Length: 307
Image (cartoon, rainbow, N blue to C red; front, top):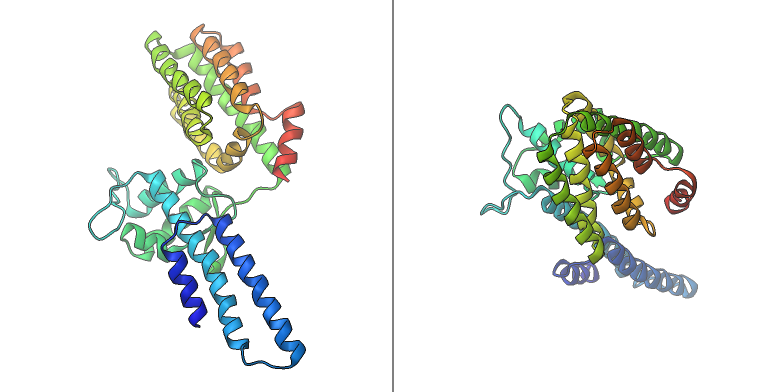
């Protein structure tokens, strides 16, 4: 067990990505297996206990770092204040319960792509992070499951929902129509003042695209689409569009990372803005639908990246 403790001490003070932790674990596991094979070949087992401890230790590297990274991503997205006891400040809005506030923060982290499909949500660590009991965390998981964002797996807890390729394509098609309708209504209802707002967002998007910071670009891209949801002045439509967007958010981030996608996004956003500000509903709907939908070569490229 001494070896496992040494691994814990060395990794706890370092900031390792999940992939890096996995690589280190694999190297240790490889050496452990070699050691065991040599012991078995000679039928001598005095070191078997320490080898097992190494195996436990390398598993700890990955699990420990993966969970720590997950919680850091949630905190980074939520923007909550740190309080003296190290918990993230949780301030429910008017009429919101603790569970609803937690759901909002976790859904935001999923929508921003900080929690990848298949990621396990640790009930105890989330409760400790936000300084609450497990009860509101469980309720938050149930609320998210109702929105098809997570899957509840009994004693295994909750995991961020993974979506099959065919289902994902169908969801993108529906998403394209919903966002197209938002753009259509926006073209009929926006004021001239809105032009300054969307123009400022688009300018920041172009700057982020020039620097090549995909994460910043993606966040600003979300702002652009959110502004159009609001401009539709249809609360129900905006809410339904956000729900579906949150379900496919991690995959939309993957699309952003495809070659030439940043340049294409900037160009397509300009066409959408021009149509809305020209009060041309048909053109706005068509431009937005084509922007969101996965058609032709873009679909084939996405499927290749998805696999």
